[in-house]
Length: 196
Ligand code: GRF
Image 1 (cartoon, rainbow, N blue to C red):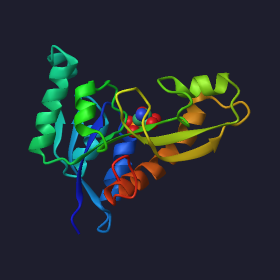
Image 2: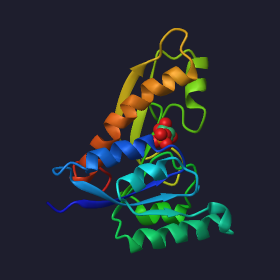
Image 3: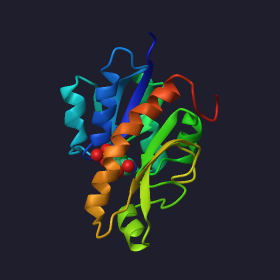
């Protein structure tokens, strides 16, 4: 089986990265991870990649004068690794339009809300404050506009009475770990996407 060569971009704890690593470890999974990039040297997720023997690259965004220069450095590393597809997994940098256009249709993200509702940050606080009865997560293709772009998969969870942002985040995260590998599988098999 020819596997899609995927890269994962992270900034933090990397629990979604771990779920992708575990899925990719299966023989019949149609993708493998060839590179993990973090913009922060202390991102916890790097240890998941290292433990799995995956090549990692730390590119501190502060070392680059512009967003475009940072993105170009990432692009170089992605090409060196032979990456054909990118999963954003808690990557906390906005990508330049140029980078997004270059990878359009091959660049996906996971967001902890039922998009198009609750784009941006502090999602769970806002969901609870608004009195929503349900929330969830979304895997979507990335387009230049933040947290927009065609949806691949969504999963819903209930918002419970007296929920705290942390409790809701944990409930949503469990679903993130389920649907992100599923969405990558669909994309790798060409069963989704704007460029089907
Ligand atoms: C997740 O909630 C994801 O939806 C959001 O950032 C968080 C990353 O968590 N984009 P982790 O680093 O994958 O554990």
